[in-house]
Amino acid sequence: MLHFGSFGGNPVRWMYLLLGLAGALIFYTGNLLWIESRRKKQREAGLPEQKRSTRVLGSLTVGVALGCVAGISATIAASKWLPAFAVNAAAWHEGIYYAVFLLCIAWALLRGAARSASELLWLAAFTTALIPLSSLLSALGVGGWNHPGVAIAVDATALVAVPLMLLVAAYSRRRLRDGHADSIWSGRAAAVPTVEPQTR
Image (cartoon, rainbow, N blue to C red; front, side, top):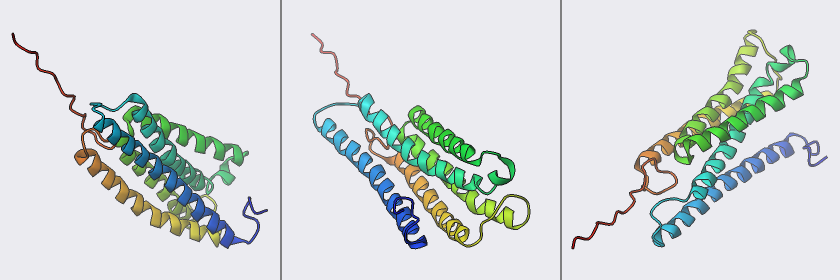
C-alpha cells in the first residue's frame, strides 16, 4: 500500500512527488558535479581535451534526467485526451513516455551535454505547459477529459515548474557561451596546446 501511495491519501502522494523530484535533482546535479571535478583533475594532469567517456556520460546524464521530465509531462498532458480516443490508454501512456524519453537521450548524445541541456529544458517546459493547457481546453469544452480536485494541484505545479525550467534553460544557454573552454558545459572547444617545431 505504501509503495503505491494508497496509504495516507494525498499528503503521502505529494510527499512521494517531492521526494522523487529531490532524488532526480540529486542524481542530475551530483553526476554533473562529479564529471566536472573529474575533468578538473584531468586538466591539472595536463590532459588537453575531454575524453569521449566524459562527454558521453555528461550527455547521458542530461538526456536521461530531462527526458524523464519531458516524457512524464507529455504522458500527463496526454491523459486528458487518451480516454476519449484510445482503446488501450495504458499502452499509449507507455508508448508516449518512452518515445519522448528515448528521443531526448538520442538528442543529448547527438548534440552533447552543453547544447542539449538548454534545448531539452525548453522541450520539458513545453511538454509541462501542455498539462494546464489541456485542462483549460477541456474546461472550455474543446475536448479531452478533466478530473476536478487533484488535477488543479497538478496544473498549479506545472505552472510553477514551467518558468523555473525556462530560467534554468536561459542560464544553461549563457553557460554554454561563457563557460570555461574545456568544461562539459561549454560550447567552445578547448584549445589544444601545440608544440612549435624546433629549428636547427
